[in-house]
Image (cartoon, rainbow, N blue to C red; front, side, top):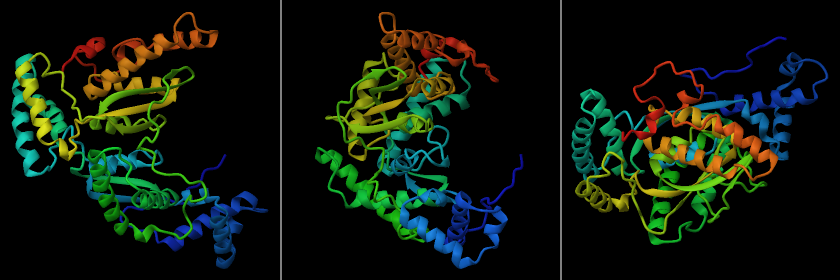
Length: 390
């Protein structure tokens, strides 16, 4: 076996489209090369570009995946980052709203600061052994539920030339489409999202190669669900729908082998952090404050999330999310989905379901460390981490 690096992304450099297209043409020649790759590299430029254009016109665009571009996206709305992150083929590094303070509007900032104080005091009251700095981080994680999903963030995003052009094409289709919403509330959301997409398109024109799109396949952005009432199913593959916040969905996108789609509830509702539950007056105040900014679509807005995948990829998800280091909301939801999965594949089913049931039962524990995961940094919670309120 021999391994050779043919191309790589060079920090600080911008690969011009002509060179990227030429490299794609070289890669296309491998499929039918009579000799070696070096022969392709030595061929006339015109022959390479003719091949690249032929492949471009034929729709076999995979050769354009060999060239990749990393974009630093500053002041991109969080929801637009979520739209990008639902498209699977990428690498991303994003400013965390869990661990850093975001820059919301003055209206949101007032509520954010107010609830930072309330959460910090509440956490230190319930868990007095918590270090002040840790309490602040946990308060920050919960206070961000009141911040708009349109709050600007920063991310580095890497994907291939083909995928960038496809995304650009899907944005154009989405902008040109009629309103996707079923209510004024939803339509205002989508109209605002389209404005962000238009700004994105203006800044990415330099990445467009005419004809590099999937118009023939008629694909579109994958995040927004046009099918309501999907059937729940648990087997070798599974499909389940549940309510979760925008923040939880953003966390779930990291599991790229699992498919996620979202739709709005008929009436806006909010996620209530468990640390507040039990304090009736505080919960009522939280809900009131949420309603006061509901027109800004806070990250704590509950939406309908459809999750589809295979049982083995769900098990991989449990090895990430059934942990006290994971966001509480997604950890608890993953645990609920595991319970559903085990229940639906229990005894009385066919032999395949029973075999699957036995596999899943190996992970029937509230924390990954209870099912064989070797944790390098054991916490105080262990298998009882589902009992935590923060």
